[in-house]
Length: 229
Image 1 (cartoon, helix red, strand yellow):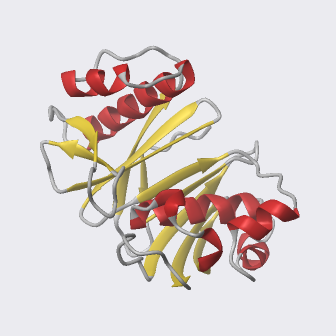
Image 2: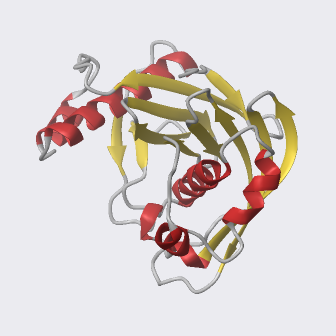
């Protein structure tokens, strides 16, 4: 995997990335609160992903603010329940993802971020029907234009947008459409402007984002990293 240290969203916002290998048992940087949360993880898989996500987040923080110390916590009792953040609060947006033995953390000052790493998606009609709004994923064939696998890009970007929103898969997926507009291309890296359209939404989710900047990156294996904010 490419393991970029920084990415820039269209418009110039700089986002710092941290990476960690799932299962590496590199948990020395975890603080007391993180270790308490780790003890509540019920499976080895979840424990390994938890540790890797925290290690990736700490690496991103060290890159952005050398010498800073903080713990990753999750929002509770709010519309964006489950969203990770650094405590003590530092005015930083944090997002985490795990896939294919890797964890990635995205970190930047300011407004919320969403990051998602996806292995190549092989999906049948049932998944497409459930995961996308009508006409949503079809737009990505033209946007990706052979540079990235369109369905993998569409799903990674949708997950990243749902993380910006702070609701994850609690949102009714068929009621949320992410419409991309290509603004720049550099190799297998695409810069995008996004419009998020929503239909009926259940109460308690909070207002969705409407306009976002995004970046998609791919590698030779077909994996896609999506960043939105």
